Image (cartoon, rainbow over all chains, first blue to last red; front, side, top):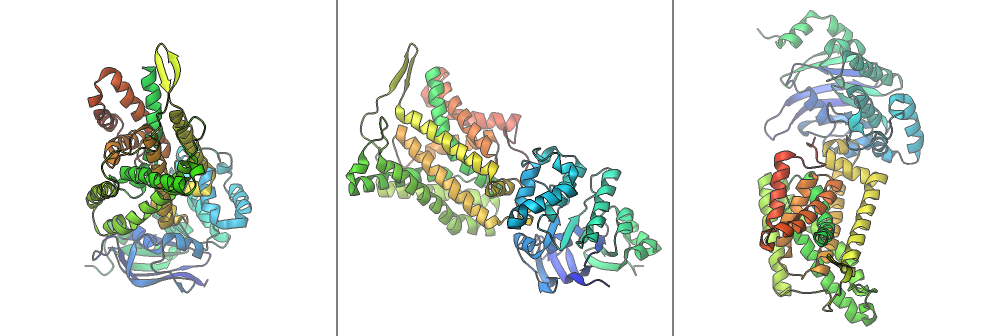
Length: 243
Length: 304
C-alpha cells in the first residue's frame, strides 16, 4: 500500500464558532493515488477540503502532511509545503491574462520558473495558444485546465480538487477527470471532491463517503461502486445502520 | 466651456490619485473608508511642515523650479509626505480598523472610519489652526492659451497633470508587468484564490495601505498647489473621491483613474449650467446615476 501523504484525524471544523460542519472526520490520502470524497449535499465535502487548504478554522483534531502537522497553517504557507488547491468556482483570476495567472502562480518557483512554465504550457497546449487572452474569456473546461495548471506550478505533492467537473459539458468533465488521473502517474496525489460520482469512482483509488459532516463509509473506490448500500446512502441520504 | 474642461481634467488628476487607494481598500478590505480623504489632508500638511523645515535648514532649497511655484524643498517634502502618510495609513489600520475588522461587523467599520476622519481632521485643526495655509504666497501667473475664448493655464496645473499621469503610468506598469502587481490585482479580485496561490494577504494589505496612503499624500499636495490648504479639505474631497471610485467600479484601479477624470470634468462643466453653489451635488448625482444604470461601475465586476 502506498505511503500516507495526508492524514486528517478527528477533524472538527466550520465557518462559524460553535457551529461545526465537520464532526470528527478522519481520512487518509495516499501517495500517487486519487482519494475521492463523496456524499450528499451538505455532507461537508467541500468544508473538509477547505479545512485542509487552511480556509476553514479547525476547532479540534489534526491534519498532517507527510507526518508534519499542518493544522491551522495559512493557505499561502501550505503552498510552500506542497499542497495546492483548485476551488470549485472562481478558480482563476478573470481580469488577468492566462500568462499573468501562470506567472503569479509560478513566482515561488524562483529560478525554475521559466522551465516550469514551459513544461506547463506543453502539458496544456490549449493554454499556450491563448497566453495573452484574459482568463475570463476562457470556456469552462479551459478555465478548469488553467486552474489545474496554476495548482501544478509549485510542483505540489498533493492537489485538492473541489468538484472540478461542476458546470462542465460531459466531454469537458471527462477530460478534466482523466487529466487528474494522468497526474497521479507523475507521482502527484489528488484529493478529489466530486458530485459526478460514477465517473469519479471509476477513476479513484480510494473513496470516503461523508454525510451530515461525519464519516460514513470508506474503502477501495471500485468495491464501493459495486456495493448496493452505497447507492442507497448516496442517492437516498440514509445513514448506515439507520432504521 | 473649454476652460471648464481644462479645469475638469486638472481636478480629475488629483481625484484619480485619491480614488486609487480608496478603491483598493474598499475592495480588498470590504469597507467604505470615509477617512481616506483625510489622508490627503495629512499628506498636504506633512508636506507643508517638511517644506518649511527643509527651506529653513537649507535656504537654497527654497528656490523655485522654473515657472512653477514648486520649490526643491517642497519636492523633497512630497517624498517624505508620501512615506509618512503611507505609514500613517498602516498605523491607523493596525490600531483601529484591523481590531474592528476582527471583532465587528461591516457597518462597524464604516462608523470607525467616520470617527477616524473626525479625529484626523480635528487633530490637524488643533495643531495647525483653522486658517488656510499655502505652499507659496507668491502670485502664480497663468499663461494665456487663448484670448477668445479666454483660456488660462497655470504652470503648476500643467505640472500636476503631467506628474499625476506619470504616477498613474508607473502604477500601470507595476500592475501589468510585475508579479507584485499581479498579486495586488489578484487580491483585489479574489482574496481567497490569491491566498491559495501563495499570496500573503497580510503583506498585500500592508502594500495597499502604503500605496494608497502615498498616492493620497501626492493628491493632497497637488490639491494644495491650486487651492488653500485647510483642515476640512478632506471633508470637501471625500464625496468626489467616493464618486470617482463608484463611477469607475470598486476594485478597479483603471476605473478609479477614469472615474476621477469623469467626476472632475462633470463638476467643472456643471459650472456652465449651474451656480457654483450647486457643484458639490454633481458627484452625488453621478453616484446615483451609476448605481441605477451600472451598479458595479464602469470597470467593476461582482466580486468572487
